[in-house]
Length: 412
Image 1 (cartoon, rainbow, N blue to C red):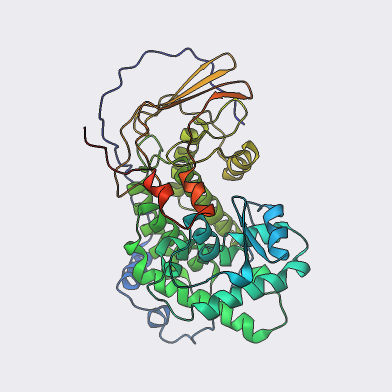
Image 2: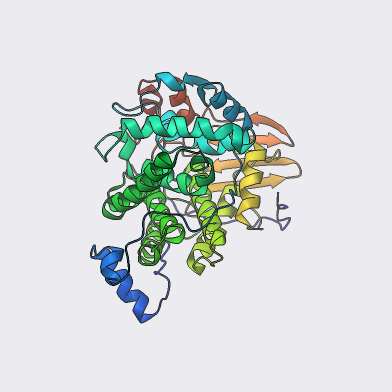
């Protein structure tokens, strides 16, 4: 983990009730021809219409992505034993409802976002995992044959699902069943088309960013994807500019949201690397902005504190993410817009929330934690927040965790 800046702290005046400023990023500069392709694609013209004399290609992947973020081997072994494992809760795969009513939020993201695929890949050789991946994917496809209004087709879940499918395609397409491989490839193509039309209908900006990243990755990795990539890059950079403040903190003020945003960009960069293409400079800039605020919320043991519904995230998980980002930097000293302040003295670390609660349209599991603080000395945490509403939902189907995290100020 990067070393802490040892420069002495200077007193600063913190303006009360300051608003979060938005980061302004323009779409990447492209040629006149590429602008025309992007415009035509935005109007809804399919790739075949842009190349009318070219034979329409069947859905296929043009590159294999090297997974930049390994999963949890223990959760993968639970999958091989027939269970999903989410924040300590086990649920039998055979009893899981892949469609219909809402599931607990963390479990829903695991099932519909296919966050279990990296865990399965980390649990053993590919030959031992392919059959399980195909079986679970087949169950999901049977339950969701067409896009519908269920949580399975939430824009955020769909974006994560498509990005995960593309990155872990070797695990899904290595079986001997040619009909199943064709079905999976057509599902990827259909999902990308659905995202093209619905990405701006996400519940929040983080979900929209996941959708745009999936569109961009599909344009990179699937045949005839050039216009879709141009369309996705422009939308992604606009959405990132709307989601991230000038100091690099996400507007939800959630460390989990910060981690999710970094994870999306790290995985997208791996897709660019697979086709030997450099990502737009704006994506690199956003990534370099996102990392320092996250580092500012780490204690002396390198693990994350509990803020805005987040539980304590282990140090090794944070270190793996930062290493994969490729960003080498120090913790942000004064996060004026994200609102968290960090004070160090020797081995002691004081973290303080010095900003108003996030507004409702940005927050998922946010709470009114203004003036809350955490204090640690070395590897020992002495004063901590309860946190955990974002994690508690994994073990409960009721709405009490969200009720414990009010999104509006309580009247006096």
